[in-house]
Structure formats: structure tokens, C-alpha cells
Image (cartoon, rainbow over all chains, first blue to last red):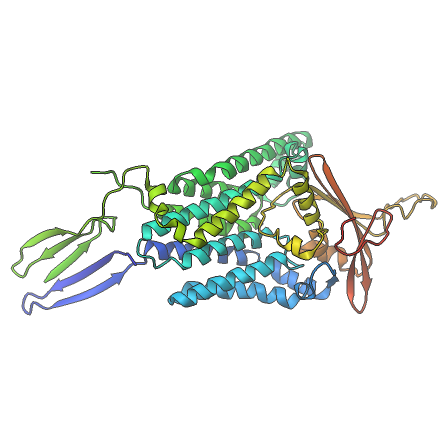
Length: 284
Length: 211
């Protein structure tokens, strides 16, 4: 594992003895790995209180729908899949044993899979983005100790921007419809009564007719940005893609909905992987 | 001996400052890896040995398949229809529905929901009351999976906490396609709510089957 080491030495002139203090800095691969795990963790705990409330509500108000297998309607399964995912992240991040890390990442992926198809959580995109990031982590953890860190990080960065591009493209294609182009959907979801700083400010400043126009252009901006990034982000150089991805994803949170941190925190961390790719040095 | 390893920002160019016992100092350069030409980093650095990295190849293929799926959705009605049914929990089988979970669907399609205290049309033929209550509790747009208003979060609590029967009308549209689903939640003190799919007249549909 590559890394920089600083040997700090003191030279005792009298005895010529040497005292060494070695400080091993984490490698780039390890830092990227930790960053992504941190992003997944933040996303999952961001709505902790919300999920606790859901847990109580689902227990009190069970819904029998034979579309779902019985075990995927059980609140206990949902609870343990969620808590298990958090535990897997902690193990994957803390335990410095490669086999344990790999197992923990696979466990995270399995827990995220359950969360994506359980009756009480299938619709929450938090778990879809968690699943994709966990998939990346599973691949990465199997290569984290490869000899050539540059190759690993280059491939990791490609996967990260391909995943983010695909997710943005999926969001875009579903909005290629008249109701989004007109702004009608976003107007009702956000502009009418969403309690968020931006929409609160807009409602205080503008009449309804103006709000509808703003909603139209806001919606078109979202469609265009998602489409362009969905089609092109994966083609960019890794560091540029990383910066663009971080900016676009962060702006979605800041301009829409604070709850979206749960969906996008892991993707923001994934985008940052591109920043760990070393720029090519000029040939001498 | 005093030794100070100075990293210059590249593992390929680590220089070692070595001080001898006599106080002399010399700079030794470690063996450098061959320089890469500018602009080839993205291709060369991860291209070598890629065929042997089956995990990488598998993930890239999965991403490509899903990207193509969402890209052609606007022009392939079958894909859009499958997505509409996915959003309404009306895919032909749970396995077929579950297999679509990796497909991202954030703020997809124009989805609306209507939550009712009694079914649509239940008051037809009855005398019109002064305070005509159509029985609609709420009617809004929703971002994706309109069925979430029944199964998820605050909506599940708020609409069901009264522990009374509820009727839902879910509508999703995408370009020229539209799907409308009617769901009744039957409340029982012992078993909770039963999720019943019906047609527009309230006739029972087989759970999860297409109409």
C-alpha cells in the first residue's frame, strides 16, 4: 500500500543514537474507501428520527399485501436490514482486516438489497443510491490492496462517475414528459407549500402567477442539467467529473429539499473519488 | 544516520535526503516509473488488465444495460408501461417487480394520488347535501411510486391512523401512456389493514395481477 512516510529523527551528537518516530499516513485508496463509507453512513442516518417514527407507525399499522412475500412485510426484517447496514459500514470502515472488510461490504450490499424491495422502504431512493454505492464498495474493497493504486483509483473513479451519470439519466428520462416540462409537478410538490428556505422565500416575495413561471423554469433547468450530466458526466476526466458531480449533487440538496441529503450524500462521496486520481505528469 | 524521506507528491518520485555520519548530505532519487503521456491517464491507467477484472466489467455492463433501458423508455412503450406498473405495484410477479429495483426513478413520471373516505361515485344518486363532502381527504402530485402514499412514512401514518377503511386512486402518466389504479385498504382490528386492488367500479382484482 503506497503512502508517504516521514521519519523524524534526532541526532544525539554525543551518542550518535537515533530515535525514530514513524507516522504512516493513510493511502489514497484507503482514504477514498473511508470517504465513500462515510457518505453512505451519513445518508442512512440523516433521516434517523424519520425512520424511527416510521418503525413505530408500521408496527402499529401493518398492511397485508400478498404482492410482497410475508418476510418482506415484516417490520422486524426492515428494522434489522437498516440497522445491519449501519453495522456493516462501521465494521467495514474500522476493522483493518481485508477479509472482514470484504464480508462487511457484501453484508452492506445484501442489507441494501432488502431495503430496496421491502414493503416499508422500496420507494425511498435513499436505499437505491445506497445500493449502488455499496456495489462500488464491494468492488473497491477487493482491490484496495492491489499493487498499482493509480489503476485502482482510475477504475474506481470511472465506476463512480458512470454510476452517478446513470442515476441522473434515470431521473432525467422520467421527466421527459409534459407535466415536468410545464413545471406543473414541481409547482405542486415544492412551490405550493413545501417548508424549505428557498420556497418559503419565493412565496413571500412573489404572486402565484410568478411562482408558476419560476416553477416552470426551475423544472426545465433540472431536466436539462440531469440530462446533460446523465449523458456526459462519465466521459469527463476524473477530477473534473468529481468537481462537477459534487457541485451538481450538492446544488440539488441546497435548492430542493434537505431530506435529499439521505439520497445524495453517498453519491457526493462517490463523486469525490475522482479527486483522488493523480493528474498525469507531463512527459520529460 | 539521519534520514528524511521527502515525498514530492508522487510515489514515482520519492527523494531521500541522506545525511552521513560525517554531516554530509546527499539527495538520492528513487527509481521512477515510466512517465505517461498527457491525456492518456484515463484510458491507459485503467485499461491494462481490465478484462481480468470481472467485477469491474460486470458492473459496467449492468450500468450500460440500465442506461440503455432508461434512454429508450420514451420510445419503447413496453418499457414505459413496465415502469408504470412498477410504480403501482402491479407488475405481473413480485420477482419481476423486484428485479427492477436498481433502475433509478427519482421524480419520474407525473404521479398523482387521491385519498378518500369512501369510494369514488359512492354518493351518486344520493341527495345533494349543503356541505357536499366528496370524501376526498387529499389529492396531490407525488414524486415517484404513488403507491408510497399507502405504504410509506408520514402518509401511511396520517391516512391510516384513524383505523378506518380508505380508498385510493393512483394515477401515473408518461407522455401518451397512463395507468390508473384503485386500492382499498380494509381495516380489521385483529389483522390491521388489507391491501385490496380493485377496478374503477370497485371490483376486486387479483393481488398484483394486471387488469
